[in-house]
Length: 194
Image 1: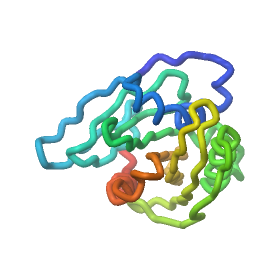
Image 2: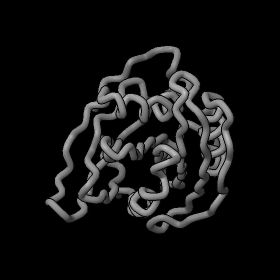
Image 3: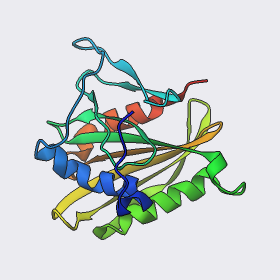
Image 4: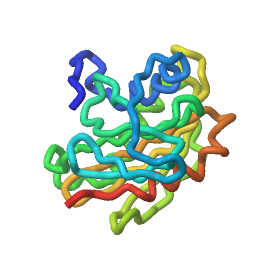
């Protein structure tokens, strides 16, 4: 597992990474890994905590999850095409018994939007079922304050058996439509490992 850096960002580490990752990737500062896919076939990749998997297209690879992202267990994408998806898993035991996946989704999105200029909700909430688990999805966009880079997010929270799983995908507005199908396919492939 990637070592964690404990900073003041730990209060909202997922939002911080999601907001700066497109810039880091575009600058070549994000270190990538390799998937086990063959030339034209998708591959199954497992989260570092062993609790979930994703099926990614051959054009994507696994990427090293940035330090300081609390509970981030998997990142995949295509750096050249500026499309990414991060999985964050948090135990339900860490929340009050009345906290739902809808509550967790709202809290994560609010936290991410606080870091954006001109945040706009584009779609959602959309209720989904992903491999038998209830989920909720939102789309929103905004401009990263520090980089003045516009980013389009597709955020899905899955109600796992014992965990809340956030799947945060992002790209630039000019590229989101060409990647939408792959993002949705990867999101729908999410599966808990029992």
